Image 1 (cartoon, rainbow, N blue to C red):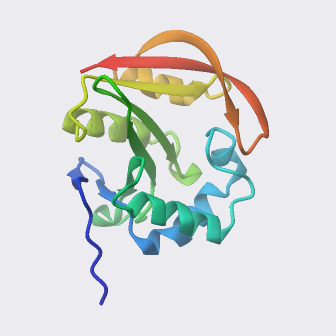
Image 2 (cartoon, rainbow, N blue to C red):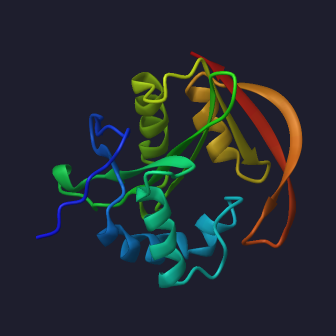
Amino acid sequence: MKIEEFVRQPIIASARFTLRPLRSQDADYVARYANDQKVAQMTSSIPHPLSLDQARAFVARSMAEDREDDVWALDGSGSGVSPLLGIISLKALDRGQSEIGFWVVPEFWNLGYATEAVNTLIAANPQGCTSVVACVFQDNPTSARVLSAAGFANLGEAEAFSLARGTHVPTWTYLKTI
């Protein structure tokens, strides 16, 4: 049995799932679910198609001590649901600010998992930040509603490059002060 050790990243319980650091065995789930074009095109960083090797590399980067982002799996196995309902991450920026990103497996859309994950992670504040920023594509109003429901304020419009789409896409930028 291989025991994986995680640095600076707590396991955080919510009502229906656990936010836990990624494990190497999550790569198969990431490859399957993040390779869904409906998921990939709503993110800036997931290419489409996404290979198993790319998913393994993502999981390995997420587990590295010198990682850029803290990444958690939304693990519903304790409630008899999938061990990967989605992914949520925090990237430490400067001046006590972090950037949040998330996606949920389409099978679990519109069930409140994204809202619960964002609220749980913000309440735990594992990076000790004073504010959190987020960016969503303007053709993704569901994620915009998740952020608004979590108390984020819309700061305005910008654009970001989407790997899956291969182009720049209009975005809304959000901020929450903690």
